[in-house]
Amino acid sequence: MRTLENMRVTVMGLGRFGGGLGVTQWLASRGAQVLVTDMEPAEKLGASLAALEPLTRSGQVTLRLGEHNVSDFTTCDLVVANAAVPTPWNNRFLRAAQAASIEVTTEISLLMEQLPKHTREQRTIAITGSVGKSTTTAMIAHALSTCGVDAKVGGNLGGSLLGELSTITPATWVVLELSSAQLHWIETITPFSPHIAVVTAFAENHLDWHGDVTHYRESKRHILRHQRRGDTAVIAKELDDWLASVQPGVHVIRPNTQDVQTEMLLPGEHNRANAAAARAACMAAIPTLNKDQVVSALSGYRGLAHRLEFVREVNGVKFYNDSKSTTPGATLTALAALAPSVPMQRVHLIAGGYDKKISLRDIAELSTKLAGVYAVGQTAQAIVSDSGGIAKDCGTLPNAFVEIKQRVKPGDVVLLSPGCASWGQFENFEQRGELFKQLVEGV
Image (tube, rainbow, N blue to C red):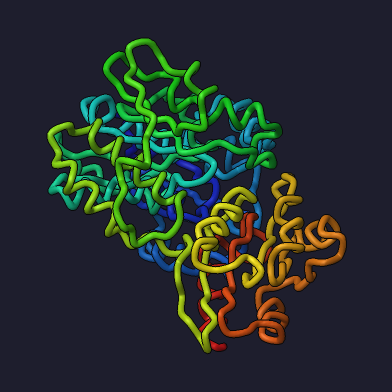
């Protein structure tokens, strides 16, 4: 275990999902002197800054907001980079740190380093995939907990687990959602693959971060690269080409939705597929679990906020919040989930957001099939252009609601499923989803 007492640590970015805040609090608890630097101004970081206030007041944590300064990266003992920083190998501040021989790490790499060896090698379940990884992660943790198993959730879902290290026992299972960016950093710093690896899906995404689809794919495949004999890989049936990445002696499971043929609270065949992957992971982790109890737990799972979340019905119109949809594939999946219960020509879709440099033509072409496509955010003009001018350029969510109110009829569905990241107009997808729900309350 590394000694952090009196080390000067620069944390690059408080982040949008709690990782930067969690790692800062953990570093301070270990005696480090921490400088947090973030390109966002203080007014956009209110909740995180409020949580840090006792540490900033004591002087153990200092802040540099609205900018980065190269000297902060070259005069410290350690840099903790936010995994969300795109193409980090080209980032001038991280390159300056490396040129000055300053160690660069990340929150997830610190967690891998700090986990007990037994836990890291025998009690980890990690999930990745272009879509479905958050829900599958939450399903696994829910099913294990329902069956009386101590399970901790971390990685890309929720805050940092560093602050919970003292509660992890030899019997604890650590369930990690791992993004492609986190997997890249893990491979770079602390090569690791979990005891149980789950891959839910693969589609082109995050090219703004990786530069090209090849780097994105290879980063995802790191989840399998260091598995050992006796480990398990749960690989979606559509991903035959991923089987070549499985290591010798690793047991492969292709989840089957027939294993969860029961009524589920979450709509859609994609959620049944997520449940099948979760069931496979749980049974691979602990073969003595009661299969019926696992399936019962999965069927009763109510889902995560902002993932095809039913908000309310107003005057015969149903509103669904799928703000977590950040890829075109996720938007198509949400529509497919609704298809059995509502004709597509009755669906009003709000889509668009931050430009991740991927094609949105699949979303734009829905304009001829749906009741309406209302484009928002940085990609709005591209969606409208690709739709041949059929989609409506609304710019913002409130403007989209103004347009929808004029056209919606009883029996229709209004779906927020952006197919794009939220950045630019929102701090994160949660903030986008909360605004949608507030607008629904005002209908």
